[in-house]
Image (cartoon, rainbow, N blue to C red; front, side):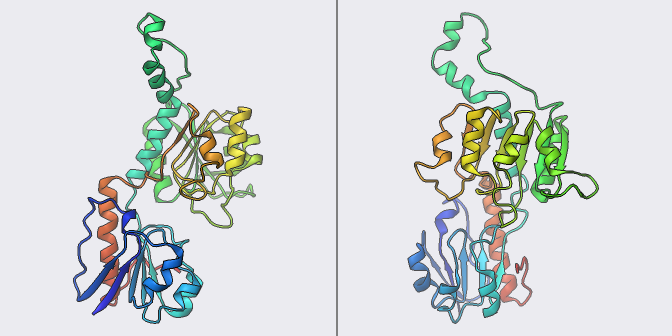
Amino acid sequence: MLTIVFLDRDTLSPETILRPPGFPHELVVHDRTTAEQVRERIAKADIVVSNKVPLRRESLIHAPRLKMIAVAATGTDIVDLAAAKERGITVSNIRNYAKHTVPEHTFALMLALRRSIIPYRQSVLDGRWQEAAQFCFFDHPIADLGGSTLGIIGHGTLGKAVGRIAEAFGMKVLIAGRKGTDQVKPGQTPFDEVMRRADVLTLHCPLNAETRGIISTREFALMEKTPIIINTGRGGLVDELALEQALEKGEIAAAGFDVTDGEPPAADSPMMRIAARLNVILTPHVAWASREAIQSLADQLIENIELFVAGTPRNVVG
């Protein structure tokens, strides 16, 4: 009888069905778990499931039975992978479940900002249409995606999917090469050139030591087209204070973000200071969260656990 402990069930929607694994087990479900509660809650676990609750060395060393950490997400930065490896703990993650939902959310933000959907909606609510006294009015800029240039930073599954949609819109797609070098792979464009040429920039890379702050003051200064910045990747990829300053200076036209550096963001953070601007859309890390995607994630999560128990682990990290 294996004990499975799910530390943060509330990170999946209530309507998501989490089927029981097909082997003898005890499932202990916690809606939420604080950092102070982790050690006690995993102490007798054989398998731990976590979406966003950090699992650090100081907790793992007090879980002698722990054999598997099943991350209910793609990113595994919540796990101390070195400590898990030392202890012989298998870490698995979820892959390719968001191949529709994240690209669609990316384009929802992109379209809303390029076409000034939010400002026009607000103008209508404020009575501007009646004041204009004609069939339409032109208070806010509207620009097509067709014929514009999209710069993609991070060209994995999601970046590729965004590129395919962009081409269907008639956009020119530039895939950014590695920052800090002009040596690029076939099909890529040097990073700084993408900064200069893009009308829209979208980020789909993981957050790590190399990518943290990949767009900051220097990059905003390079941008010649006053682009829109879209981030459905990870908070921390964009320097948030530099983003606020770029909006103030007019170096970028707009920003559509689904992630922040620290979630939820502090009430006095740069992201919350800019959130009410009509050229900013901030959504609460829900680009991944279509009904279909979350159910796919839940199904894959249980399959990962079953395969591990069967001796054929899948999606192993580290």
